[in-house]
Image: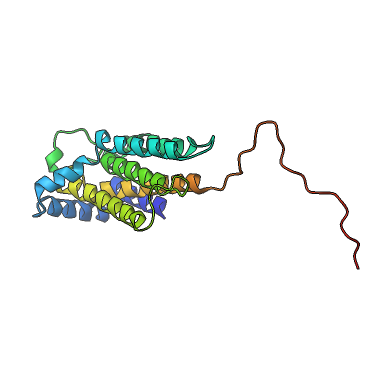
Length: 218
């Protein structure tokens, strides 16, 4: 569903469809709204890599430290791969679509769809949350699990609103990034939760089924 929504958004942006016209009117309305500019800039800055990446790296380090076994580095590695996929996916689409930005970004090179800051925040903070919710490290329990998810949703929404309110992006730029980020986080969640066989010492084989005859049938 997220892939289909992203294709629809891209098609409307490229073809100057009615959804793009509505999007730009909505963007101008939000940019001129009464939402506090200072708060908007604070949230928008949370999408910078210098802020989001240290949060993810900290979650990766804590997860590796608290997880036992030789596969302790796999969850952080999966999270790192998901984060590395953000520029690998977003940058080529930006260059191909070459959408101009809002009036506040006049003079900047075209390439505002999808939003890189939105994708950075969504994947970095989302991957950190997934790592902290893993059952093996036991880092977040009980009500704190729900609180952590709610905090992530608030931050992610705040980044999106902040970027549009500050005039850095159009709403469709943000929504398209959400669609891409959902696909990356879905893949990360599958990798983190897939069942794994218990580790065995090297050179050993799994036990074979017993071939001893059972009791005679009666």
